[in-house]
Length: 366
Ligand SMILES: CSC[C@H]1O[C@H](OP(=O)(O)O)[C@H](O)[C@@H]1O
Figure 1 (cartoon, rainbow, N blue to C red):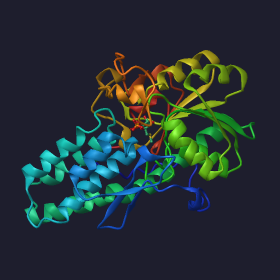
Figure 2 (figure 1 turned 30 degrees about the vertical axis):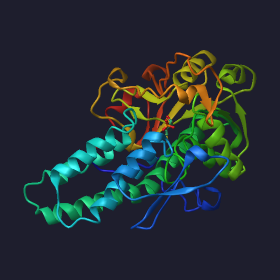
Figure 3 (figure 1 turned 90 degrees about the vertical axis):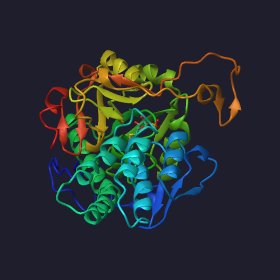
Figure 4 (figure 1 turned 180 degrees about the vertical axis):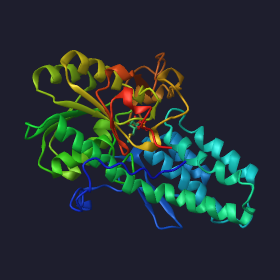
């Protein structure tokens, strides 16, 4: 699978675009040989980086959601495997295949990790390369998963920003709404939807962002609010239940969301609550935009019907920062994602262009 897709809308991208890195939090630290990830379950109260030395460490932090966010999950899983392959001198095909399946099982809905590590399979299945060459190609590929994310993210954010300029030509500043965390803590760069909000702010085109706290795991209040405060971006935190009233009373121009799995027809899985926002956007005639890197496109499924929705433990709803809020005996249903049908989506904004759901399938690069 290629990571490089270069369909830039209204290019070239000016060097000044999102050039100020000082306002960006680092989700991980990688120097080529050692990896540390920011433990996001401790945020916002503690900033602690923890070492990742192998696939097992990577699986553990992804499964626990110490590290989360579809693109970041793909990078951390890939780097966990790379660190192991840097330490071996012989290629063990069965071992690598088992580790690929193990990593994929960590978060079943987000497709970026599956897309990334499955990109190793053509290398492993080559009938012309020696095992030594295959091992080196695997190392180079996994490093490229990390190295390419930043450049692809910049193209993604630029393309999405161009779409907003085109959609709102007379609005000097936009009021937007977003859910969950889709920023520097969900990627290794600026972020998807939150990257676009950062760009609007940097380009003096943002009036205000409404940030949903995003129950039950509170990625909005814990993570997005932290990024916005750190970056000085104008926002207001609201509860998920306030979204409709904010749309009715406060002139929201558009909703920008991330994605975890996008089917060929444009049906999009994202954090639970996203479907609710899309239905509200339909009622209030507000544009609804998922901001989606190529790595989140799932070419293998025709519609959202085929997307498996991860269910998370009851404790993640009953407890906040470990403190029991409800009765521990409460029966709970805790789907971590929902699927927004393509007919509720205005356009899917990607690093290979901005497309209506009807156009998407025919524009997905090989
Ligand atoms: C850059 S999009 C990240 C995507 O992942 C989040 O889910 P989770 O926090 O459970 O990993 C959410 O759905 C975001 O939109």
